[in-house]
Image (cartoon, rainbow, N blue to C red):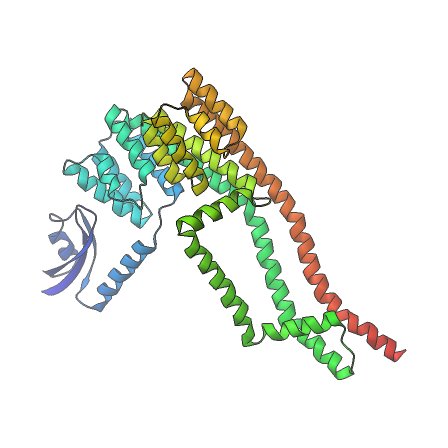
Amino acid sequence: MASFIVQVKDIKGKLLTEKVEAESAEQARNKLKHKYPAIGKAKKAGMSMEFNMDLSNLEMAMAKVSVKDKAIFSRQFSVLVNAGVAIVRALGVLGEQCGNPKLKKALLGISAEIQQGNNLSDAMSKYPECFDELYVSMVEAGETGGVLDDVLNRLSKLLEDMARLQNQIKSAMAYPVTVGIFAVIVFFAMTIFLIPIFAEIFQDMGAELPALTAFMVFLSGVFRSPKILIPIVAVFGLVFFIQQYYKTPVGRLQIDQFLLKMPLFGDLNEKTAVARFCRVFGTLTRSGVPILNCLDIVGSTVGNQVIANAIEAAKEEIQQGGMLSIALQKKKIFPPMAIQMMSIGEETGELDSMMMKVADFYEDEVEQAVKGLTSLIEPIMMVGIAGMVGTILLSMYLPMFSIFDQLG
């Protein structure tokens, strides 16, 4: 008999290895089927299996659960639960077919936790990288009220709306970003490879270089020398400093405040944050989550510290008997129309429905703002590209006029 190393997963979804004495790899796998729920590859004892395990762990560490991944899972999970499939079986089925390794491990682990008698929300809270506070709170509200299937439907709709909004912004900005990258590459290529050729020709002909040409020749020399590392290191250092400063409370507040006031993008950032706040808040309240808990969750998911501070101040005022619309109006962060619609919702007792309408309105506003911003950026980038290429061509042609004068 030979020794085989078999990849297995326990009931918690943890990846393990077992050493088995068997005649063949298939026989080694069969010996472990009664012990583990999932059996992987089997190889003879050696270094190759350890290497495969390291790659698996690396893939797990690098995997990221996106909003789209959670939206797809939530939709499929809600369909299975509505169809009467047991939660444990539904999680097992979705876990086995999940393409994201991190989410797959979480689903198998949650299934094992439920088999041991834990609640779904408690099991999900142990995997914060996959299921955040918003997700767990809504599932907990659904379990408490006995309407888990309904809450899962709302969760999937919420995540789909958030994913759609992100995709709209990304797709709209894809063209300008691509053109900008292409323009920078062309500028560097012409400066590094084309200008030195003409500079050598002008030097052989003894032509006097104009100021623009001399500057471009100097710039070309900088790009082709180790000096180019200085601005590159400076840019990376500045980015690193901003990232570290953003992690501090003061830095996060100042940078988020700038993002709301910055030219062109400030209005877009504000509308995006308002749409997210109203969508999440409306979904939470409609699912039965208490309003103070809603404000806690929304404050941590809104994505802007200035708005999060306004929400925290509103929470304190509500605890003292105040109204949400009046509390938010005092901070002068939310647009007046959003405040007025919140006020109407509070007066009529339909705050959740009014919040969803506000979210629909501002998501449409974001879409229109992105389209308008894209239509504004595109001609600016075209002019910028023409300016860069024109500057290089002009710097190469100006010395020719001097040469023609000398020949004349």
